[in-house]
Length: 65
Image (cartoon, rainbow, N blue to C red):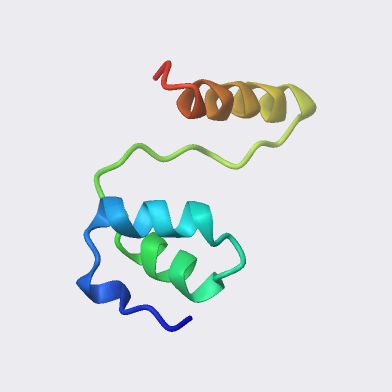
């Protein structure tokens, strides 16, 4: 299925990517639209850093952040 990602709103594109996780082109397009002012997280160095970052991701997925 060939989609026109430019015509989709951010919300529509995000929903499409979640439903079509194998569509790498859509994911790349979605990532190119991310907010440049959004908070960034450093690359984890230690196992403790990795666990802390996984907890942040879990909380974001669950809508706690």
